[in-house]
Length: 326
Image 1 (cartoon, rainbow, N blue to C red):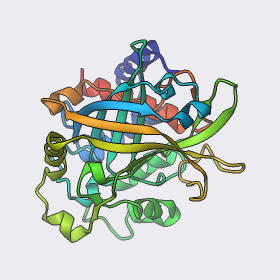
Image 2 (tube, rainbow, N blue to C red):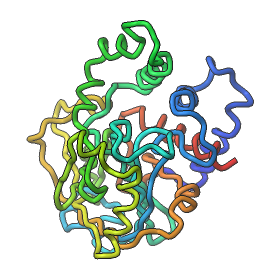
Image 3 (cartoon, rainbow, N blue to C red):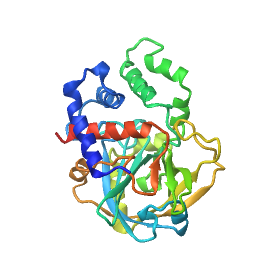
């Protein structure tokens, strides 16, 4: 379980890193953030990735099945307040929502627990991650940075893709939705649920909309630059948006440490409950600058798996947070 002191330590760690390390000696999480800044540019006050977003509020109510899988308090069946952020990919805060580069889109949920603590999920519309390790993700970003439009062919990016077929395979699973409310979101990392009897079950998260609606590239290109950011608050004025929060259960032999390996579609899905979003946050741009969502901010009943990427994501997000909130 990640407590508030550990979160504070991560942020402090992120603040201290640039002063005490050289770029080539920096931990992989700092190298990732640095490479994102090279690829997307530095935009004061914004995240290194998924810079453009919109914040809303609502509640989560667990299903009876959820408590059978995990003793986590938010699976107990009472209404749990949530803060939710939807986002476009890249670190470019004015990227058009219909751009291919805005895929994958993300959803981050902060569950506000009765004792005053939070637990988070950070998932996106990719069905699996493009590469197997954090180091490979850094190398992907380096290859992109070293492949400007006038680069000689094959570019560093083309060479990387040729040796990592999971990259095009992963990005083939995404498309532009007509609304954040009509997109499905998937957890690339595995976590372990522990129930009251001590039984353990590896899971990956899914957030499933009432209906899935994607635009083709021509339709997406015709949309206004901020159509996703504007559509959600407008929709919420007419009524709430709901998702089914689900857990895909690992079976024997399924990798829990390689996020580039999806589990087979026939793996059991358990309905964890309903996420209801009913209110857009006023002045969303300012609100989201203060929010830090961490995939490893867990609570009793949910544990990290053997996937080392979770720790790297935690530290990278903390570094990004410290840079946008100096």
